[in-house]
Length: 137
Image (cartoon, rainbow, N blue to C red; front, side):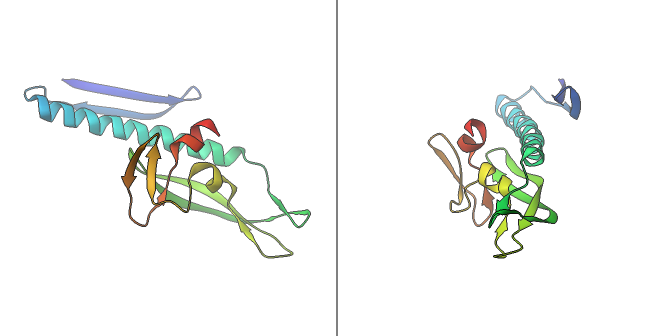
């Protein structure tokens, strides 16, 4: 079976997957379907994380706007697999504190488990994504 999945975000195409999926064996068919779902999930999360990062306001500290210290790519582990997005880092000119505001929305740095509801997935020492915070936050 030839499968084509087109993912659109805000009216623009962000991914187009075309795969030949074998339907001869049920287990192989289901595993291939799960892999496709994970690919689509990673694309949707990547686009959503980036949009979230781009919409945040410039943070303040010590009563003044913090200084932009450039953008860096960070990869977080999700139930769909690793997802990379670009985030802006800020530093206070007075107290020299650092902030990456989008991190607080996307993941819980203290946890090493990606979680959705009560499901937990071990992710080693990778940064993690906390789905309930990103969806409801």
